[in-house]
Image 1 (cartoon, rainbow, N blue to C red):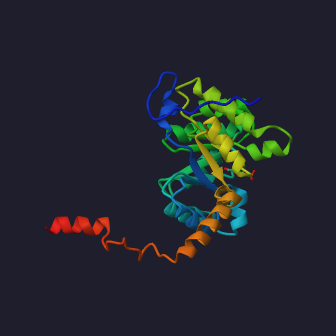
Image 2: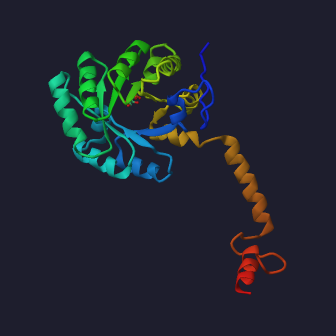
Image 3: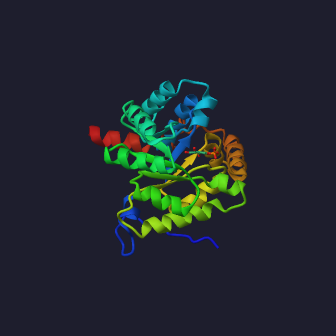
Length: 263
Ligand code: E4P
């Protein structure tokens, strides 16, 4: 049975930690390197950040640096860019290079000994780090101790191998809540469906990074479509147009207010 932690409201009730009080809403990042998709979804006002990875960059077929700079221009929130070196010195050099490209770049490093060493150095330099490829609570504890801004546990890939990805999210949130000095935020990654997002929010995870198709699927409900269709059919029978409609008196409340102001 999965443990469910209740997110606290905006006030500071007893039992709420500073982490809970600071987070007023679940944030949505978009998990893609497709600039057209990001531009389109950013217009919804629902996008708080972006995550990329080497596979997503390869899928875009574009130059990594160009894509990254375009994304950082579109979305002012955190944009994760992953290093591809596997040893400390190389990771550090790539991380510093990427971080210099835009103020909202977050450096993504894999959860390896060299990755966490890089995380500590970059974090100490004030460069935010997203520790990716996290598959256990033990790994998440290491990421927090290394000063990560985000840890990315992959729920979908855990589900794929028969584990319960969301149990890992609940475990990490619970553990982090025990230690106010852990400032790492839980970024739910490898999201495959709207239920993953709902569960992440139920548990109180700070961020979910969502593929565009999943974000679009979140709007959908057959009863919404059916209900709208019925409302519009009934409205058409009235023959009215909201923008042209006037009350029987011929005056709207706005007209009356204007009249009073003029008098
Ligand atoms: C995000 O940061 C991850 O790279 C991404 O969510 C992985 O998702 P996938 O398991 O669908 O490739």
